Length: 323
Image (cartoon, rainbow, N blue to C red):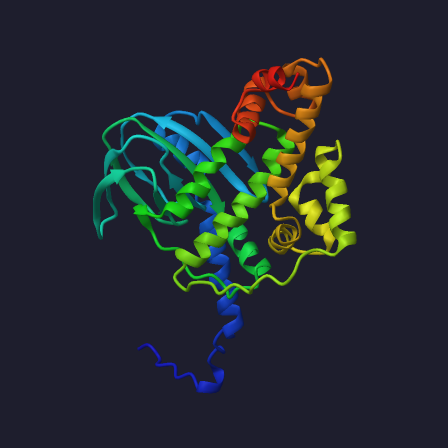
């Protein structure tokens, strides 16, 4: 006959401490996130093509521009948040996630947000142009911390949601996918911070509260920042380097710089370099191609587009009028 074993309460193994349980849960969550594909890999799989343009760095996520064929596939859970904006023609789509079905049209002025870890089936019935930002949660947390906000809640999924502010911000990234390397990096850092701030304020489960900006940079710090921006070394004009030299976060440096100059660091540098271009076009016989190369633009086309945006004229036409 088997014996009945009675264990006294004092002999029972103690329950795991709450801290150990929390750490175990955090470890499982981190492990699950690590197992998810990054958004650029998953989008390449789903869209079955490569992006027309792509730029990335470790501190600002990935920005891509796609032109893809109709698709009918499931987007698997990803490690990054995906934000999309649509620059052109409206296209009909359906999205189903097991709980809800959304039918609609993509169009300029709308955005789609797929939070990290979300999965759904997509049916897009025509070719589509789309600009996408892949934002790691670590970047979102970092921007929230720099801005002095409370911890962000979960992002809310949105599909073809009317939001002209976020749409314009993201579509402006198209200019940074081809152009001057230094300008592109500086603009990309600022753009990511702005978009992350926008997501925290408009799409977080618990909207973030931001502290107001207080004053500009001191004359000494502003002078050092402008000296760096004028430098010929692209390494000196990263937003992280400018902010670190000022002893501020990237978020607060951008606010203080604009308070002092009326322009963001990227806009100031773009204006400064185009003023250099005007001087070279007016006072020298340097070819337009050489001017573009000397100012760090990737091509004459990219330089001409930036110059026309400021002056309304091509570099060659402007030079003829100035002489």
